[in-house]
Length: 228
Picture 1 (cartoon, helix red, strand yellow):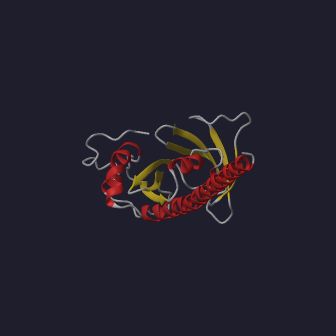
Picture 2 (tube, rainbow, N blue to C red):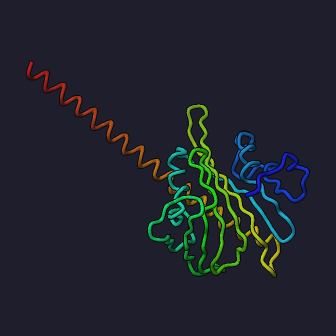
Picture 3 (cartoon, rainbow, N blue to C red):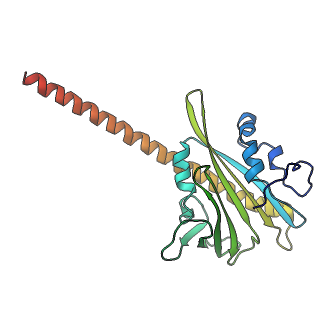
């Protein structure tokens, strides 16, 4: 992916995602994320292309969300319209690997071959491009970044997902963006649902372990009291 120039705001061919707060975020959250938007979510957008940036706030720790987002081989965990995903035997998740996705019926697509373009485990960034298949999303590229927040004793995560894609012949830029935005937004909403449930289960398991440990300590105390 091309990195943005220092004159991104003046370049009419650069996307302007760093200038507008995505729906669902506060201005304060977005101010913290602007450097990331400029670095990872800026695209060269010429005639016949469209781009968008969407955001999702998730009430779960960053590590829980990243655990799901990073799995290039299991997009169906949170992506609504994927029926199945297959990878080659001996699959290793690294930049350049590919996956073959089968899409549910009812969409203007059947299959999609996708390549992992970016995977930064430390900065929690991943990205892919569509390189083949039966669909209308030509030259689709996407980047997802995951960000942890902690304020006033509260912990939450913000996920940013952006894309750039060709506008199909016979479609308008607005129609193309509406379709792609709807798919991405539904996926992010499901990601929130899945990971928030994982976080609740994790909290419940942690609480059960604490209670079990408490009872163990109490039993040990009673034992030693009876045998003194």
